[in-house]
Image 1: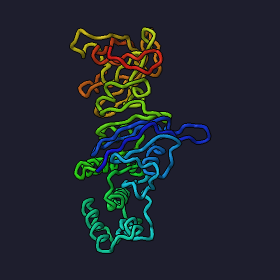
Image 2: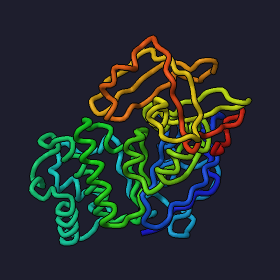
Image 3: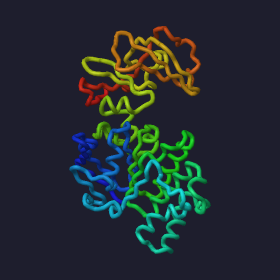
Image 4: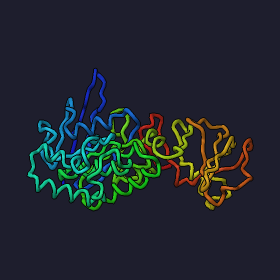
Amino acid sequence: MSAVLTKDIVKTFADVNAVDGISLAVPDGEFMVLLGPSGCGKTTFLRIICGLERQTTGDILIGGTVVNDIPPRARGVAMMFQSYGLYPHYKIRDNIAFPLRTQRVARAEIENKVEWASNLLGIGHLLDRRPRQLSGGERQRVALARALVREPTVLLLDEPLSNLDAKLRASARNEIKQFQQRVGTTTIYVTHDQVEAMGMGDRIAVIDHGRVRQVGTPTAIYDDPADRFVATFVGTPPMNLVAWNGGHLGFRPENFLPRELIDDSAVTEFSFRVDRSEYLGSERIVYGVLEGLESVQEITAKLPPAHVDQESIRPGEWHAFAVRNSALCYFDKDGKRAIRH
């Protein structure tokens, strides 16, 4: 196990900085998630840590050692790709053993490590099958086993669940997180899926246009976003933003409720016209506009389960809504700083 430290990493392609000065510290044993939209530079940054891409400037330290000039195979890292990259004509045991054979590890040691990794991930009964005979979740575990047989000090995962359906992704998230907690390997996980990020990461680094916008625990990222990008990227529906005293006032949809539901005098009240609503079983999402205030997107409210069937909130009508002052965020005019209102 090893800590990972990057210092001012820049990667330039044709005069465009795909990675624009990322400095990030990942302590030994941490599960760090890199979260951001497609094309924001997170995969390029991961490939730089692995050594598959060469940074334009900056330093990478693994376990306190600068690895800028060390080849990928000697960095003590393993990378699992989105496509899994399994060899279709190899049996599963040979797919798992492949990185060890390229390093000319003794046959007995290869057999022991393949058995260890396959048993750890519950795929020991699949070793004599081929990839086409496996489900998506089983192929994902094979790819993870192949990464682990090298006993890496750092595990790098690039959108490993994107090829799975929604139900399988949920169980796979749980498996990967439990596995990482069990073995304690320093892990950096790339995703554009905020559910994965919030559910798996010890901490999250939110990336946009090659820069880190905020690093923090899932709770900190969600409750105290550092800027407007983080506020609107994290959360479904995203945080509401309205023009307010030269800046923007932000509040989460679940905190924007009919006034009569809030037993608190320290609130900010709004007149809310309901345009439409969506019934989602456990909740109802209500969409509309605020009277006299300019918003950067459609305003949404997430009503609690006890009020899912409430018929008094109908489209086309104005209603008194409010937010507890403790749940408000204020963003200044440049959108770069967030202050609790």
